Length: 103
Image 1 (tube, one colour):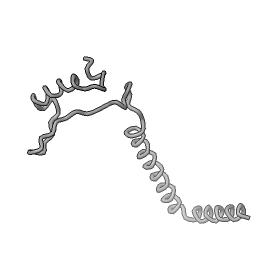
Image 2 (cartoon, helix red, strand yellow):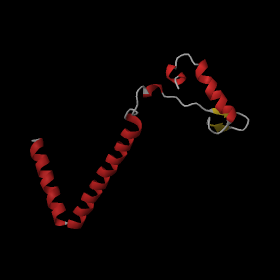
Image 3 (tube, helix red, strand yellow):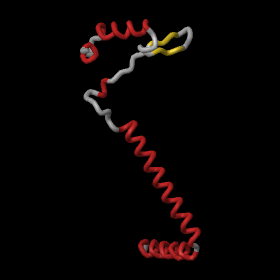
Image 4 (cartoon, one colour):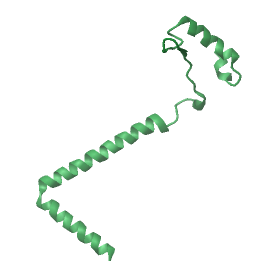
């Protein structure tokens, strides 16, 4: 019973779209754009969030930076000589990061 209802609805929809070619083109274009946008968003999310990074032990990746509370500024080790010396001393004090001490 459900099968015959679905077939009747699909036939009716096809007749209505065939009777209005401009409307059919708008529907098909809208579907194509929606499917394309959906694919683009999920491809970007997969590449940025879900795909692992292309090097060994990427789960151990960290970012080191200094913060200056009075000015609320951040500095990378390349931006400041004081930060550079702290960044060079930090691996010697680290206990669980053997790859940081290898240069």
